[in-house]
Length: 131
Image (cartoon, rainbow, N blue to C red; front, side, top):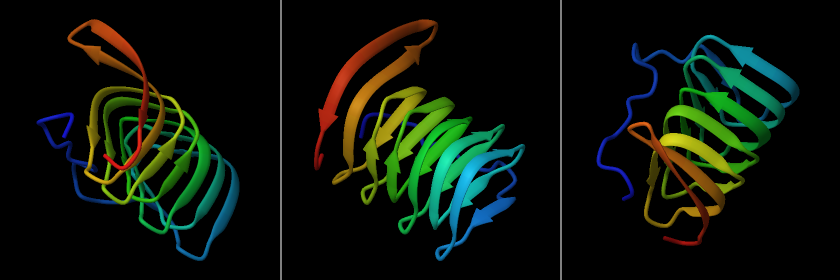
């Protein structure tokens, strides 16, 4: 909706770390590869690649990654050097900084966005509910 390019998560199609649906995890998670969260996570997440929050995922964290795709619940601030994609089932409560923002129809986003545009940056206070 807000972007015309779809980001491809995990260039080689591999997910290296999975937090399962019935798993609860607290702390700091650092990885060089792609992380998928389908359970509950609280803390900090840093990845050199991508982070995927599945529909059953519930995350309360600070995230720093290349691309982030949210289909579940995310509470916290996100810094994505590439694309942040909020899927139709996704709910995001927090501030974001990303180069590309894609918000699916029906998604919920409440927070501030800061996006770079070819060296220029724009900052907005957004409250988008049920887009």
